[in-house]
Image (tube, rainbow, N blue to C red; front, top):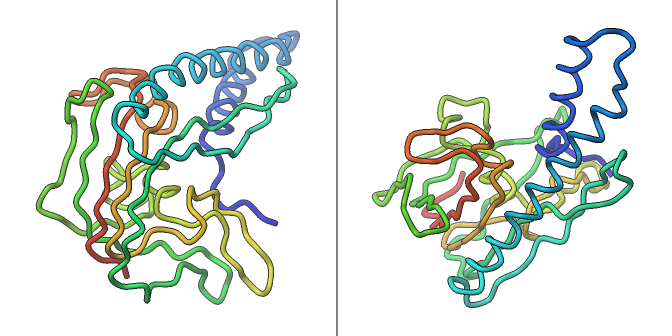
Length: 216
């Protein structure tokens, strides 16, 4: 099975490794650099997991934990992505089908939705309470809003193409449809990372709430 979204956790490690290769002498111990980076990310995820679980226990009625693990090669361990989510399964229109074009390229739907993004203290840092259209492609013009968290919230875990399952790594089996309400809490690494953005401090876990008004 093929993975269509390069995991952000993997990209973060690869980016640091590539930078180290470009900036250090030939005798640099790249394995040691990679190990250090994996330890930093593992520590961050571990610390934020405690905060996220506390938030979920107070704010979710029927929480589900994402069980997908990523391997850390140099730490020789697997870590959970760290997402928790809750879905209202009410669907008012089940007609949209996630899939690929004839060339096998993943189709990114346009969704109409209301959403809020909050810090774990409850402060809303971004929102659209009226409802607007968004393209789920991160490279689109709304890339400052749409991120990896949006993608794995909407797309299903896998999609069949030519009889084979292609792994998308979505949080749900079928993906979100019109009528769904969805809550997800994410570690900072998948949202805004170590960069302060507007009212969002660096290294902040984010709680999203989506209400799907339409999808095409």
